[in-house]
Amino acid sequence: MQNMIELEQSLNMKFPKDFFEISQFYSGGQLGDVSLYSFNINEVDNILEKTFLLRKTNKLPNKFIVLAEPDESLIVMDMENKPRILWINSTDIDNLSKNRFEMKPDIWQTFSDFFIQLLKQEEEDNLR
Image (cartoon, rainbow, N blue to C red; front, top):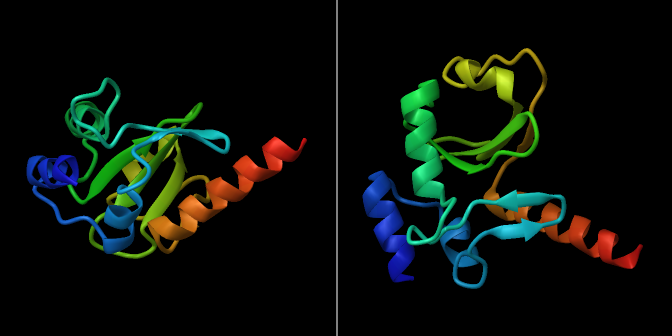
């Protein structure tokens, strides 16, 4: 919990309730076909580090935090609006501020919706 408070303070943002609640038992890592960045700012490849990097190098709008960077794509969480989670093509990062994308992004209304889909994918993968 303390780590999430530090992460919120470092990003100067308030996390959605569902994201904060899930962080009590999950702190990033491989889930389904996605490897989410660590929620722990003291670990390598964490949300804070990656968000600041993309803000600097790609002008990621401040209302987004970076959750993961699967091959040639980017998963971000909108901290102000719904849908909360957007999985975009990496070439569309400059289009985030306009909300107009060359390739239609996958979207989830909440972090919980996204997390549940990853859990289902993990379960399906384990049954194979």
